[in-house]
Length: 252
Image 1 (cartoon, helix red, strand yellow):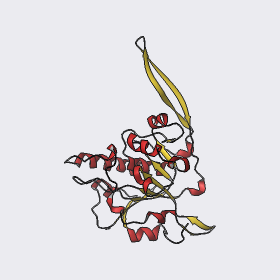
Image 2 (cartoon, rainbow, N blue to C red; image 1 turned 120 degrees about the vertical axis):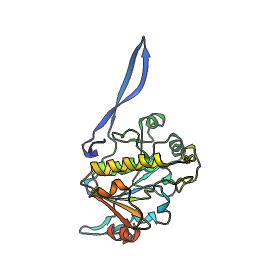
Image 3 (spheres, rainbow, N blue to C red; image 1 turned 90 degrees about the horizontal axis):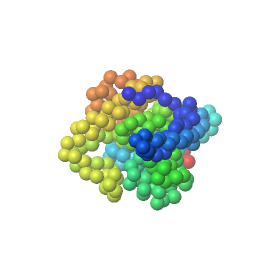
């Protein structure tokens, strides 16, 4: 079970730089990796977490770069958190990328020079200066749940989830299988879907003071059984999402 954790309280963490054996004894060299991203409290509130399921194909992500009117004038519609190959079509506020092949592709571009990309210790060591350390990475989590977890850890209290679909046989997501990261799915995806659902359930259970809105093309889409009992889970259609999040009012 993950614990409730906030990045505002995070200063950094010790990582093992390398592990070697000398005369039968393990030598573990550790280095301190300081926090590199500091959130402005004025940016905290609404987050849009973008999964790569096909249900978001027709949604205009550029609306998430927009603004709306507020007490202090034009305000951002919120921060966005994305996964993996999303960077090829949209620049979220934060991108989460752990897969070695996708990180290798990113390294060949200038994307990391102007955007924030979180990754794991191995990729940070492999490509110095390219990535930011994902704080306290939950073991075994997939990219979508990692993006959702980080949005909560950053302190957002209203979190919209786009493209959070579950896999079907022989169907992956909206991006082509251009790297080894997007290999074919097994004939049975029940176990895979169960892991993803459990990870998302764990996040929504731990961050019980966060309002989660799963955005779907059809509001009547079946809700996973575990989510039916969560008081902070809501399922909404795209029209309701645009209205609630005040999207499209002013182009940025």
